[in-house]
Amino acid sequence: MPDFDDFEIDSFSDDPADQDSDDYFNLDDTVIDQSYNQSGVMEDKSLNNGVSSSARRSSADFSPDMDMLLLTAQSPMIIEGMRLVLKHDFKSTNISHFSEAVRGVDLYIKIIQRNPANFQKLTAALNKDTDCIEVQQIAYNLFKNAYGEPADSDSRRLKAFELLKDTLQNGYCKSLISLSLIQIKQYFLMTGDPDFSKIDFIVSSRSDGGVSEFARLEKHVAIARNLLKTKNFEINKGMKGREINVFIVKASRILAYFYTKTGYQEKSVFYTKMHDNFKKYFVVK
Image 1 (cartoon, rainbow, N blue to C red):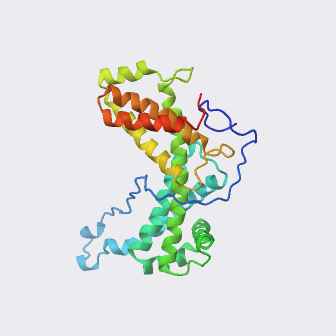
Image 2: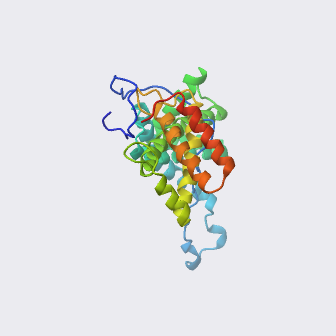
Image 3: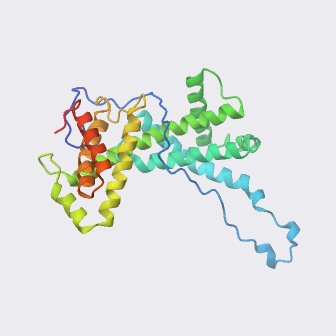
């Protein structure tokens, strides 16, 4: 299919990928580092201007201004993330868009959690910014679609933004799997079989980079398995989630071999069973 990350997997559909989607979904497991630095460092120049300390503004005075600045900066990124979700565009190149979108929604959530009254005061200013208006509409529509009620209270508004975050987080995870599918190509031959010699070299050379790469691959497999538990885990429209299954089959195979060679028998058995179970139901070349 054009414009989509390919990993030489069999096509399971003759229909071209439809880029339109209005599906919404939830992701229960948190898989992204959602920390966001909301602090601002401001030099107090009044110390040398004869102004008494009691007249100086505290960091609390600047908090609403900083919140407003951050929200207006992040809102376009949230809108871009939702645009990609609606287009069903989860290519590996979009991972940064989804990451920034999740961070942006997380900022809305933290502001509401920290001080709901302050968020209501900010709303008047936010409603002068078209991007902020659109972000709120998206979140509140998600809540109404899910619960059939308006997001007309602090707790409901918080839940609305949590639903929006889940949606974008799911998109992030799909893009992450698309990226990981590309990255593990280096461990496979043109025939589709694992390049065991390359893995052997990583083990014998005790390469820190190689070891961390396999540790990261483990996390990606866990993310892929969590995606399978959701009601919407399709990456490429028309493929019915086959990419995730192909990824698990291939990744679990090289993980099983890697942990056999490094002496982690329990992990080797775990990934061997996973490979065998998934391979039974999906044809991978």
